[in-house]
Amino acid sequence: MSGSIPINLQTSNKPGQEKKASGDSKAVRIVLTAIALLFFTVMLLIPLISVFVKAFEQGAGVYFAAISDPIALAAIKLTLLTIAIVVPVNTVFGLVAAWAVAKFKFKGKNLLVTIIDLPFAISPVVAGLIFVLLFSTSHGILAGLLNELGLKIIFAPPGIILATLFVTLPFVARELIPLMESQGTAEEEAALTLGASGFKTFWLITLPNIKWALLYGVMLTAARAAGEFGAVSVVSGHIRGLTNTVPLHVEILYNEYKFSAAFAVASLLTVIAIINLIIKNISDWKIKQQFK
Amino acid sequence: MNLAVKPLKFRQQSVIPGFGLTMGVTLFYITLLVMIPVSMVFINSSSLGLRSFWEIATSERVLASLKISFGTSFLAALVNAVFGLLLAWVLERYTFPGKKIIDGLIDLPFALPTAVAGISLTTLYSPNGWIGRLFEPLGIKISYTPLGITIALVFISFPFVVRTVQPVLHGIDTEVEEAAACLGASRFQAFRKIIIPELLPALITGFALSFARALGEYGSVVFISGNMPMRTEITPLLIRTKLEQYDYAGGTAVAAIMLIISFLMLLVINLFQLWASNRHKT
Image (cartoon, rainbow over all chains, first blue to last red):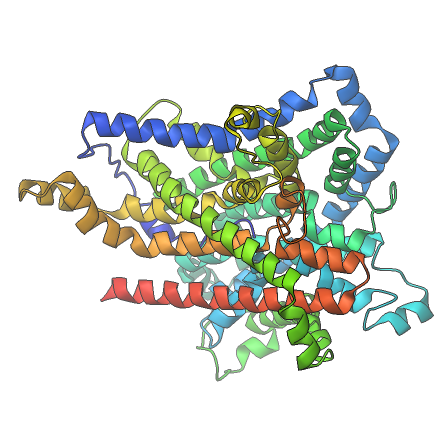
């Protein structure tokens, strides 16, 4: 879904070739820039600004009341719990998968990468549905077993965590694979030849080379885990104070016409998104520096 | 770790350790979390039987939702292809104040949760919203119409075209264009004959990614569409509605259709990228 476009790092990071010269006449340049900026402002900038304007429309009192409301706090707690589980699990998976895919040559590599990418291609609603089909206590294939054990996964936090694990699975791997492939294996081979252990090689050679891309992958995973709506909405059951995450709380407030409160809670998620963009830009810049 | 030492037929020898372990963990995790859950949709659909599956797939409401989903997603991807190319061009070739900040903000739709995008756009484009207010006197309604759905889809899939076209544009040597100009080609000719053919694979990839993302989108559309069956009900929303009415069989059948479409899109995009990269090599 969101995220990653496999960009060829070799071509996008040619060092020191700034092309400022353009064959376009001044009039063409001004008109094109104006149209592009107008589109950017209307489509991206105004929606972003309006979140904060609407959030503070009824004053700071309403804003802080909305985000410190007990139900809002319960939603924030559940979202933080989800992040705390999903981010470490998918970070380890991303590192492991990127190592397997980028450092070795084997048959079926493209197929494996396609399967890792699959959660991006699947509608969030379908992502939620597949876990209902497995774990629902009324319709799931494992319903008998779950009822016997007295476990509840769907309409409960475990379902939310599973669905979030699914939708955020590709992020770290997708950030690391192209970078690690372009870096090759020469440095690791040198370290291993000199007698370093496999783990030491990873820790001292590979990790420093990929740290910025890894940080951005982790940040993307965290942001998506905090903001996922469709998949979580299918498995959550919308029980206030129990199975509502922050985005679901935004939906409830909005549907109850508590617009200022909805935008206040939404502004928290927007701040996460902005931090995410800042880290992305720093990490892109750092990776470019590495290539120079 | 032992596995890595033994020569495995399907991979090339390498001194790098950990192939067996990392590949094992990767396959185990994606089988458990992706392969088995996704296959559930097909297992459940097949238990329906072909006839009832076909009945659900061709029911009036499902067909209407597919028409709306495909129509709005196609239109959104088209808008993104045009304006994405324009923004990539302006960001790559021109200089103007604030360029770096704009470049950094392009990815906002990927970072912003869809529910936030949904409530923000719905409020802006509703009849008394900042932008909707301008169109109200002209008799144009945006929120709660297919036009509103399209705008939400343009927003959420906007970065794809910019980000696929930008690196290719960066790689094109301006000398070729200068040579064309020296040989008497007009600027428009140079653009059409030199730049567009170079950019076309990236542009089509961006378009396809944008279209695929728009087809599955739920969070932002659910707010702005108004969710009227037959008129503004997109396919992912129809799945959700069927589940809420405990029509699990119906919801799963529609999900199977969506999954097949997603797989086909993924296949086409991958084949196309393979073709484009091979074309470049020769």
